[in-house]
Amino acid sequence: MNQKLKSYTAQTYIAYALIAPAALYIILIVAWPLLETIRLSFTNSSLAGEDYVGLENYQKMFSSKKFNGIVTRTFIWMFFSVSLKLIIGLIGAVLLNANLKGRSIFRVLVMPPWVVPIAIGMLGWLWLYNGYFGIIAGVGMRTGILDGPFGFLAYKQSAFISTIIADVWVGTPMVTVFFLAAMQGVPRDLYEAAYCDGASRWDRFFKITLPQITPVIITMSLLSAIWTFNSFEIIWILTEGGPRGSTTTLIIDTYKQALGNYKFGRGAARAVVVMILLMLFAGFYLALLARINKKISHE
Amino acid sequence: MNKYNPFEKILIYFGIFVFMTFILLPFIEMFYASLRPLDHLFRSPYQFYSDDLSFWAYREMWNTVPMLGRYIFNSFFLASCVAILTLIFVIPAAYAYARFKFPAKNTSLYILLAINMFSGAVILIPLYKLLRTLGLLNSYQSMIIPGVAFLIPTAIWLLKSYFEKIPIDLEEAAFVDGASRVQILRHIIAPLSTPGLVVVGIYAFIGAYAQQFLFAITFNQKKEYMPIPTGLYEFIGYQSVKWNEMMAAALVGMLPVLLLFIFLQKYIVEGLTAGAVKN
Image (cartoon, rainbow over the protein chains, first blue to last red):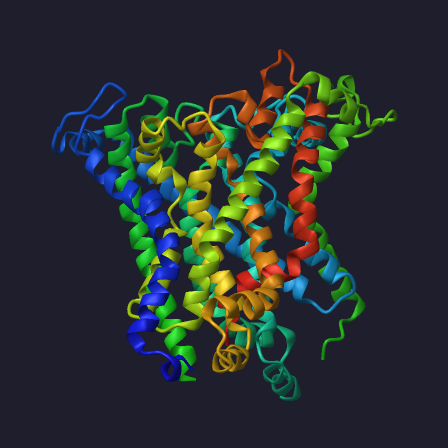
């Protein structure tokens, strides 16, 4: 319509003027800090002041065994967390997609872990994981699996697994809801045709549902990977990265360096690594999204 | 074709039961713990049964942490400020994206998506220094300013799709009748998009309520500005943690967002998943 009413350039100016406040805000609060982080990573910035130190922060970081361990750990943590979210989310979506009584209530009941502030939800998990009085240790002791109190967050391996489970708990509802939405978007006539051809329920799931929702599964895996990579509060509240660093992921390490010790330079170097990895994820995601959208508009 | 035999039904319900147990167990256990007397909670191994359940903890918690009311108020106040500010920035931008063609439109929309992927943790250092220079550390602003930035991208996408649903003919007609852009915005767009604005506003409120922790622990040390997600950790400061009161306070702290979400979940989920199920 607007071509008729106003020239293209006038339209552009109005649009830019309308977008300007939001754009400036994001430039000041997100874009500038991102660039500033890169600059700080080449300094020894602290509360006292800063000097240019070149690549020192990076050299120290990459030659430290601890840091390399943290990177590996981050990816292992992510791998388990994301896979579990996707698997449990898919199973949950299939179950809640079944045409049975009560499913609309269940669909609402899945969401609380997603909506509730993570920091508050984690209080519940702190109580569940309590080695003496918590229900998980309690069930373990009563069934004889544990022979005494067991602090799940106090030992390296169990803390690693416990933080993953809590992260899966937070992330699964969203995955479930998206998969469910995708399943309901699958055209019904596909199922009807398959049913007439005598396809079993399994066939229909693997030959229709799964291929049809594959784009959503792929996008959700990437998005989920990004969010899991960014996961901070869960680990921070449950273990603060401990015991003895066993749950210290990149994000936790970045935070500790930067704002635990006020070593801004070192923290910034870690933040830059985080940024680069995130940009890789984001690039993948956006490229994929563009491809999917193209495909849709072609069809 | 959607008929299940009894065996399949049982199997599916059992699956749902297991799935729901995982999702809801922490809440159920929090609620149960909040009703039990402290000496029942401090028994090892865990006691499944308590006979004297009461809402006592819900009264006592206000004495144990005297600032609790203030923390809840702070959370509301912070989330409201963030939501309102987000709307102010997002309404014109979303309108532009919905109605105009301009260079770099799609690119900038994708950049917005990409911003969503950065966690606040990456930019905390410059923000900390910026807020310190401006003398804004330990204030409400220190939590509001970064909060708004991380809600703008999704809010633009959500609101844009609401604006796009408003028939363009209405605007055209008004334009032909000589109405100005401002008049169109006020008399046509605003009333028609109220439901969308409410949903996006509530989305921003819930998001702001949820994201308070990181900014609060980093930029604010003052108790009087603490939001409830950090304030709750005061219960842990005592020699023995009063778990029942802490759980009661946690449930009270999450109730507002939970209620808001349950009332509006249909609209919010529709908006957020729209991109996922376009075809």
